[in-house]
Amino acid sequence: MARTSSQFICQSCGAVSGRWSGKCESCGAWNSIVEEVAQETTPGGLRGKLKGKKLSVTKLSSDLKPIERIRTGDEEFDRVTGGGLVPGSAVLIGGDPGIGKSTLLLQTLANLAQNGHKVSYVTGEESVAQVQLRAVRMNCSEAPVTLAASTSVRDVIETFDHNDPPEVLVIDSIQTLYLDNLDSPPGTVSQVRGASQELIRLAKRRGLVLLLVGHVTKEGTIAGPKVVEHMVDTVLHFEGDRNHQYRLLRALKNRFGPSEEIGVYEMAQSGLEPVTNPSALFLSDRQTLVPGTAIFAGIEGTRPLLVEIQALVTPSPLGTPRRSVVGWDSQRLAMILAVLDSRCNLQIGVKDVYLSVVGGLRVSEPAADLAVAAAILSSISDTPLLNDQVLFGEIGLSGEIRSVANSNARLKEAAKLGFKMAISGPTKADEKEVLQNHAQLSHIRDLLAHVSKISRD
Image (cartoon, rainbow, N blue to C red):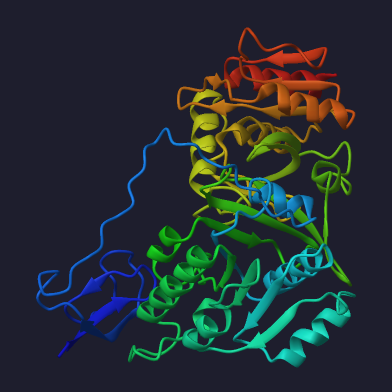
């Protein structure tokens, strides 16, 4: 008979400890440790009367049939997944509550169903009638999507484990499902991990695409243990600012395509609309000849993207100056300010600095250093930068400006939107010049001289 014992498991990272404590020693989360009952199903290990079966071993050089991806009809969704959904794969989609995860998936299923694919939607948070009302609002209620409402993993397996399963199955959400052979409540680490394992086995066994919706913690990470992210093939994060109509679908992990790829959507009254030219969208409300603004030519995944970076430097009335950052790394801002203070002899340490990436986008690549520094210098000198120039480059601690990858793609995107000038670090010798006026700077003092020249002119 299987013995039972208690374990104390962190609901944020999945770490197991022998006793309860207020703070998890692994991830540092407070009040996240919950006692759960652990069952020892194999007390004697794998030694016993039951024997395993021999595996089917094949060579690496064996002929492999090409896998035909399932195209959803949504260019942005297909871009993020690497060209479409792969049969037999498991995809985890996380995002803040109310950001539009269910809307995106219902819209995607409706497109697939209208193109002749067999799809199903299982909800554990809403009733079937509520999903139907949302479909009416999105003008996709006539799509042949099958709906079901359940929180039991056993019922879901029993319904779809047959020879004619749907091609795509959505579970909304994994935190609401439970296994009846576990004593812990739904949403705990044991339940989320166990439910995910059973559903992923179903996807691999029947060759269907499994789309799991995951909740997000207040820190912005997908709730539940990290092992769930390791179990699935693709992890997508749906993000955005509720005060803006833009939404970003970002691939954090993808076994079948590039990671850090993004898809851009605009929230409309009838649902989410894909944005084919996000650079023009992010720059549509840009005001020209305003001090403290700079245009950064970035790369998100494989897509070049132009975004506006705004900075405001003001005298601080407090003893400790403020550093407020939206859409960028605050530690990297502190480094840029220290470099400007030390290498350019600027007294920024006693001033308040506010930095924002316009449009709700979050920039993570170091190539934004040069644009951030230019926006700060423009705000300090109260000098607007030129309207038709873009900036990109990484800044080192000694003040040197380093080259970054994909310079041609950044410059081509800028030229397509009408920009005529570029400021960057040194580019590779084999890269062709796309813009005729392209200044390649080697030190941060060169950028200061460029801004000062604009001020004098």
